[in-house]
Length: 144
Image 1 (cartoon, rainbow, N blue to C red):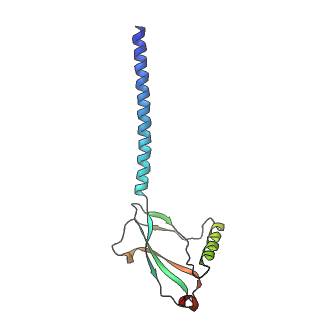
Image 2: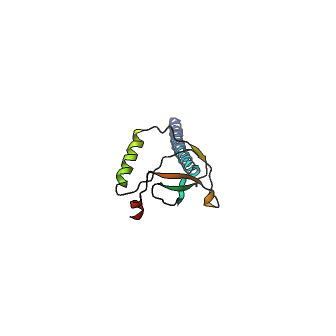
Image 3: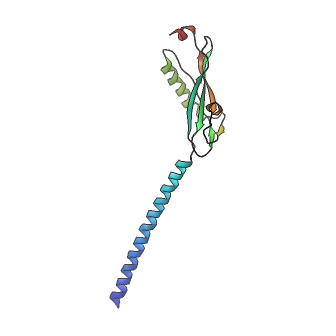
């Protein structure tokens, strides 16, 4: 009788261990599925087209940057900062600009928008931002 009780106890403990391992595997699988669902449903905002304005001496360089949300959810609180750098010291200008951005965090004065998901049939209908150089282009820059 004692051996039967011991056998039932061992089988029960084995069943509990198997149930715990199955529960752990299901929990991990659920967490992975949740993570994949979030990645699948998230917004993916990417640039699609750059439309430069005509260059003119004495005026800043300007372009319209069109962008689209390729994801399945609206992109909320979309904002950004931009600048166009040109000339022989463009990299130094960019470095200084990024240093200023780092020093001025948090970004409080930048307007935000919501970008709905979906790709328009005509990219002219896509959301856009107008980017501008900090300084005006000179005649010398236009020639070289």
